[in-house]
Image (cartoon, rainbow, N blue to C red; front, side, top):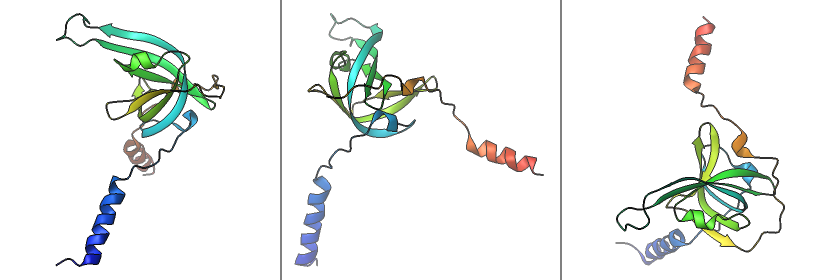
Length: 158
């Protein structure tokens, strides 16, 4: 049988597990390929519609819209991929809070995105100047298989 003390400890653990964690805001220049769970405040500099298909008139077909938006803060800029309803929120001049954002790789460069587990909120205008000369999406990354390189290095030592 569980004692009263054990029951109290279990209740405290349940309460702790349901408490929300305070968000840790990151800056654009700290974003790295393949990472997720980012929360950041950024200004939308530009928005460019890259795909729009489907008929809005039909209720069965859902309209698909994708826009590439250049967003940034005082440390740099990155391209953000806005999908469907997100496109309206990402208007140039808006300041947004991106919650649970992730980094996707597209043609070797980083793109920030918010999927169904994340959230975009338009907030009051931020009082920072965007550093536009540090665009992280212009950095090209190459996927390197470390195992092959280690094996190749081992073979040359024979």
